[in-house]
Image (cartoon, rainbow, N blue to C red; front, side):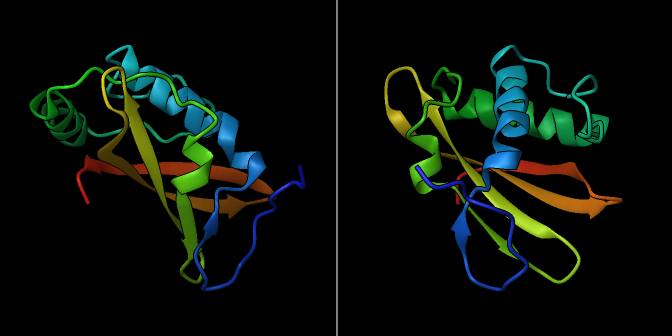
Length: 124
């Protein structure tokens, strides 16, 4: 399989391989009900209000989240907006498989490292 690299263009593309382990850690934390994400390298901690919103959206959805399967990368996408990338990661649940829930995040490059800001979890 060809490696998907980070591109700075305005076309939607699949999630680059270099970001995937971080998104897997983020979703694993959410599966474990760690909504603040304070211990994942290069992921900015989430505010209490945003963590509360994410917790409520996941609970209201009513399905049990699971860790990201390989199929996540078939549907999740990113697009570049100047100095950052906007990302949508599709969630999977125990019963449904691919769910309607998604994670919205922003990724920025600073000194050749990528930093992640989690915006919200929602149904697009």
